[in-house]
Length: 151
Image (cartoon, rainbow, N blue to C red; front, side, top):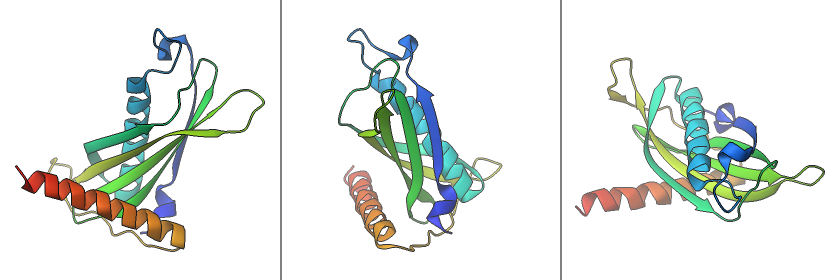
């Protein structure tokens, strides 16, 4: 399946309910938004329900009240029953350009109507950028597998 079919975007204006005592966006709130968008992205790609198995976020900068946050999600890797979604977060002040400020990688497993884990569609690689993203996802999947096997 073509990864562009999973492309999902969401925009949110940061309000006072989203900030911490330092006046910055709560990391947990951004994690929630990234997980929500990642779930929509996974469901669109699999055409079935999916549940989060792992979440890894890098916070590079903070965001503040009245910034517009744009989240862009895309499936970058598929295994047998799991897939990895990358969500990029951008912030934008009124009248300025978007600035990249966080990235999340989420592993999802696909579920049937009885909540059993099922196979996911295979991703199609159509560009060098998609190939590089797939290889990053493959490395992440391998690391997670090694961690599970180390127990």
